[in-house]
Image (cartoon, rainbow, N blue to C red; front, side, top):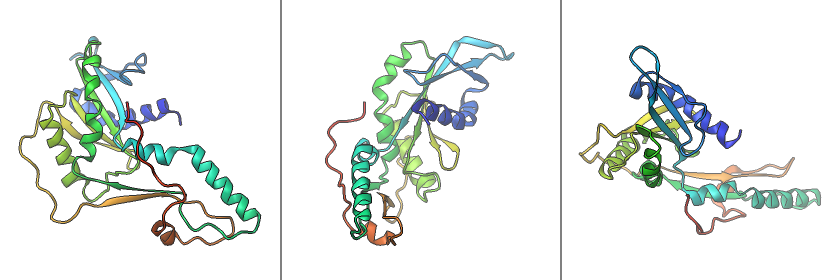
Length: 239
């Protein structure tokens, strides 16, 4: 799936929430970049009203350094090739994960990723959009996470409200659940700080594991050890 196909899939999943926010509309096939899509709102009698359009921007809220580390295909391929060659030579099978990263879901996890797009709003608004909605996705955070609805979403709404986030709405799209959830509505800002859970919020340890063919692999042991390729410090921020 290409990046554009992924954006279209994200938009399709968000359509029910967008319809609740903006009413009937059609997707503008001509709008594909800066922002990633646009909705043409329908008038009361169902006619297209080209003067009223909603821009749609799609982004990942996952930390850029983690994404870059896990998705770096070259280092991954080099390590897997080394392991395959070692296995072919009869050497002992590797027991470590290829890569491993810890992702902590702090109360600003959703808001932090969304706020990176704030600087683009004025540029998009200058193109004539009545409003711009932001669709956010994550490879790590799922809607089924026990802290998602009662902790992460309320805190994201609060932080975005306090920051005066200019986008009309922020919608979290969970690709695993194939569902979308309204996180923030510019017209309904939150002023009261949400409660925090009594215990610690959960984190997620993500690992890329590749064993040798025909050899057993202890998944727990692979997680406990340092990975073959460690994550260095990020060198740049997401644009």
